[in-house]
Length: 110
Image 1 (spheres, helix red, strand yellow):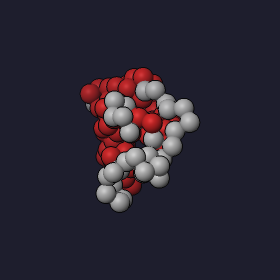
Image 2: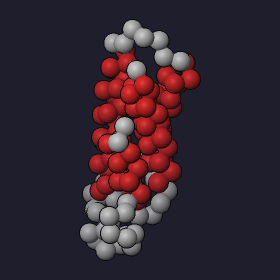
Image 3: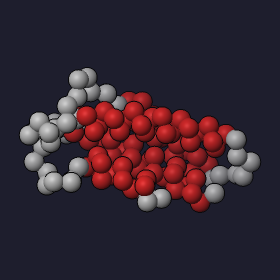
Image 4: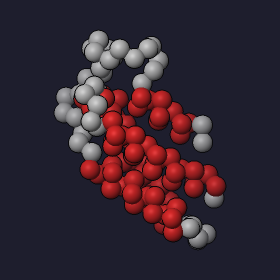
């Protein structure tokens, strides 16, 4: 159950990161941003389906995080013809550093 709660918290966190980064002039048009939005929507949908099949009760404030994440993810504008900003030479973050990818890497450690 704690793994599911951490997953719920992750989707809430990541939807906030994506929501915030949509105003960044580089991130909002990056392929990593596009791919991450798509994966987050798919993953959240799977998680909600998994939660529907659970018999253990979850606290309402935990379940509300899935609704908030869904609202934020659905409000995002998915870039059209996105390009990797680093590969294009526009993103000057250090090698191996990406606001979107670093945040997404959190899930691998849950």
